[in-house]
Length: 518
Image (tube, rainbow, N blue to C red; front, side):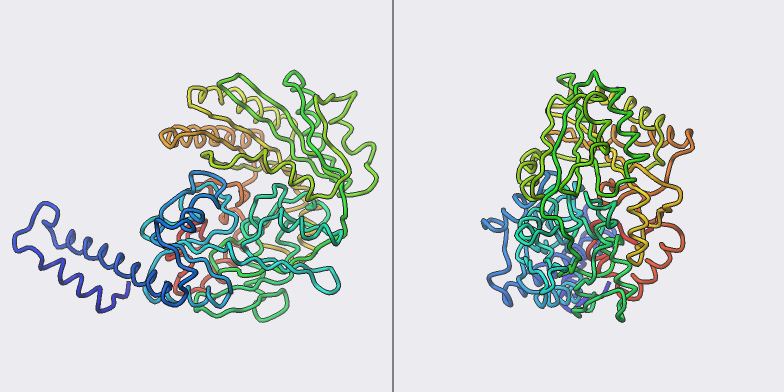
């Protein structure tokens, strides 16, 4: 670490402050550690002060209303609330360029936040030893003259995108939940209702505008001098640059068939068969998608089966969802209707509660009926072990990754993910827990890690386990880039070294999964 004169002065002061060592400073190493802490605080103060001097209306300190809003309200889950030293809220990409130069010069840690949806502490927020860079005001939203490309800023969420595109009869390969942020979804790949037609969300990107570690503002496309960076950003996470604008393809889709069906727990066998059958054969019609979710409230002894059904056509196929409808499986409620996607998102966003404590974990397997049943039965049985935790709830969702989806990605130039379409289709399962109190964090985490290991072992014994871990649903100890394939990981590492040899987005921005650590 490079130390400026001010930090050397702090070290000298720390080393000479006492002539007789005390228990706190009874070694040179302890004094140097304290001096380093003093240096960090001095540099952090300098960074906040310099940004405030340059942008007086962009920098917010603890105690202000904007600070509170940016560090709590903008987050979906309470596990992300934190207390950064200051919050910087730029309005222009050029202001991010200066920010990067400041934190790099002063060796100050920071975090960047898009939608604030990743439920891992300090992955999209900073504590008192760092600065939060908020993208709340980077809200570009404009469509090209030919109405085929949308430019969107990283401060946007997918419901805002859907609202904007509705007036043009268009849709993006974006989030299935409106409050999810644009950057997080795309930089992790992005599973969408439209994925069987057009691939991962990142596969529809045609240009990334971003700030490099040097502070330079560049644009990366599949064909320009930054084509390697363009490829890496299509599911490579946040190790390369700070994205300040996404240009993405949009598609004709003025309205869709979409809604949620709910089923009684007594329909377990029929439901699991429908989930398996759609996973195995549903992609024969790429306009269709499902999000089958089992929801549990162990204290109440409640298990609820649900399925979001989606079909991108004015005419609903009579067969595509036949296993989720009567007489095969009779829903208690079924809200599917032909409507603009933004209307659906407006209706369902309130079903995703804010301010709870949340955790995700993920696993992936080749679609297999026995594996579906095993995961369901194991999880729904063992979740009762958490029944004494106040407010605890859980869910699991079987997300189809179809051959069509993977082939569409390959056709668009490919991405780092590396899943082989020939070995699919797959289910990417997301396990989700929510609870009320921080005192129960450790108990939930221990349970979550343990049951994930048990489920993985069961999948391996059945010969259907797949190493891939979907970044957007992974927990912090789950390996992500290691499972993209050796060649893709090597390429990601090379791109990271090329564009950030100083490790700004690895060491100074520690939140998230880092390519360098894989």
